[in-house]
Length: 94
Image (cartoon, rainbow, N blue to C red; front, side):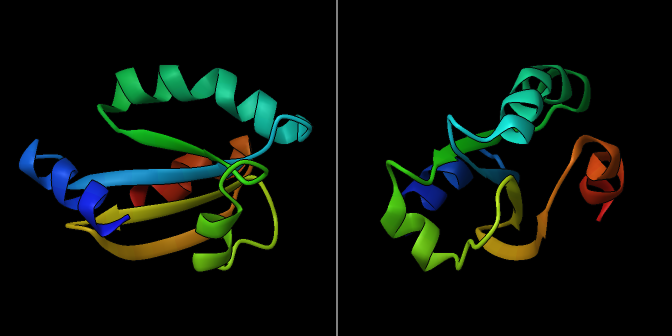
């Protein structure tokens, strides 16, 4: 995972988000539909992590509810929150 973070830094991507979700999660599905719009409008990067496929990563980041976003700045986790579309603007500004 750290290797992936460092690759993002090499691309000069200093702020990015891990989006923990699953195919069966209805709020996750709704959020995924809006991620592309948010990425383009706000010039952000979201990395989708399906907890059913990447259980080891979900465990590492102590994900207990989905959808969950983790915001990273310079590869350091700075904020983690179970999220919904109403809270997304507040979360992005943190």
